[in-house]
Each structure stands twice: as C-alpha cells, then as structure tokens.
Amino acid sequence: NNLLAVEKILQNATLSFGNHEGTLFDGIGKPKQCVDSTMCYAFKSPERYAQYLKQAGFDLMSVANNHSGDFGPEARQRTIDVLQSVGIASSGTIEKPFVVLEKGGIKYGLASFAPNYGTQNLNNYTAAKKIVSFLDSLCDIVIVSFHGGAEGRTKQHVPKTKEIFLGENRGDVYKFSRIVIDAGADLVFGHGPHVTRAIDLYKGRFIAYSLGNFATYGRFNLKGEAGIAPIMKVFLDKEGRFLKARIIATRQIGEGIPVLDASGEVVQKIRELTKADFPGSSLTIADDGVVLKKKS
Image: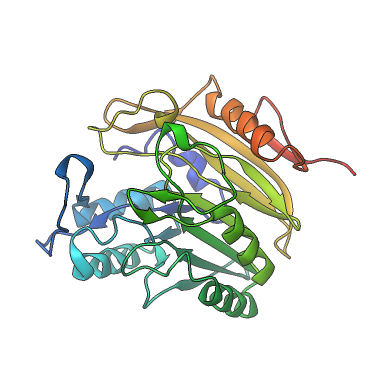
C-alpha cells in the first residue's frame, strides 16, 4: 500500500475523490494496440489493490481517462465492479456517466468526462450539459471530473482554447469547466496533463484544472513538476458555493510513493500558475496552502 503516508489526510473528509487512471483486472482482456510502443502504456493492477484505495479513504473515483480502456471494455467494467465491491462509487463510461452517493443526509453526484473511446465525451458539450443538469436535479452537490488538456512539463498553463496532443483533441478545458458550472456543477476537478495547473472560481464554484501526478507507476520520470501534486481539500456550503480550500502539498518518492511535502512546492507552483493564467482571479493562496475568496 503506497498511500499510507497520506491516508489520514484523505480519510479526514466528508468525501474523498480520485481519478483512477488504469485498470483493476486479474484477467487478460484485450490489450490496446500501440502504434509507437515508446509513447504508449497499458496499465493494469491486481484487483486486490482496490482494498488499499478504500483503506486510504476514497469514496468516489473517475474512470473517464485514456487508460481505463487499456485492456478493453471487459477490464474497464471489471474495474468499476471491483471498486464498487469495496465501497467506492465510480463514473465516466458511456453506460455510466454519473453516480449518486448520499452521505450525512446530503446527496452528492459525480459526472466524469474524457475524450477517449468508451468514456463520456468531454467534447460533446450538449450531452455534458444534459448530464450535469439532470444530476443537479437529483443532488445537492454536483462534482464534475474531466480528463483533458495536453501533457507534459511544457503544458502547465491553461491555454483557454482547444488542446491537441499526439493528434488527439484533448478538449478546451477552460470552456468545458464553465459550461458544466452553468449547467449546475458545483466543483470541477481536472486531470490529464500530468502536471499541476491553476485554480479558479467561476460563479462561486471552484475549479482545479489539473491535480498533477499523485501516485504513479515507478518507471516514470517524476522529477520536478512531474512529481509534485496537491491534495485539494475544498469546503463548500450546502448549496455548493465555495467557502475555502486548502492545498496540501505532496511529492512522490521512490517508485511513485506520495508523501507530505514540507517545502510546499506545489502550493507555490499553483499560486504562480493561477496568477499567470487568471490574473483577475478572486482567489488568494497563502504560503500555508489556504485558499480564500478575496473580500469584495
């Protein structure tokens, strides 16, 4: 279990959410075909590893990403079933674009999107609006997860336009985030670039454009920006409006093991990126990671 150093943080929340970028599958499945094996990875973990995710405190997971289908539809569905078997709800496929979870008398909904085959399409704004609007009619708090944007150290900024990476349309994550908030989303979390991106507030709703690499397979280069990530602790009122947040800094050591980072490097990085990409943002980010709305 490589989450032991951070599990107390994840457990200390009303609800903990993550992006599961891979499969939990003991079978063979149908591995994806790679055009260039040097730029292509297929991720599969033993099904028993789901217990570690539950032990760490996760309640919700997105499976809308470019690796949940690495071993075909069977493995993707098995991942959903295995997560469910340990008490983790998930969403993001065409068949299951959203999930509803009740906790403490409050209904939470999670809708997840990506530009990849078999997932709920990030680039289909009409469908996204319908899904989020419907979820808003069912739930008190609506969370949206997206896997989008180009990848790598040179892609830390939010370009506010469509991003193409390796020939694939990875979406306009700026536009998408605003569209889903207009449709009823209260909280938006982004993944995909493998580096942390800026945060912002739109109509009183919080957006994190990329949460970086949190717990990663050890063979990857996790130096610098690729190895730091926030645990983003967000506080909302019962209507979903942003109250405050705290960026808890982590970095990966060894073979992809997340630990708390006393240097707070990712806090400074998010502050720098937010100031650059959203100079008019109504958010302030303190050295200790506390995020507040500026007083008007």
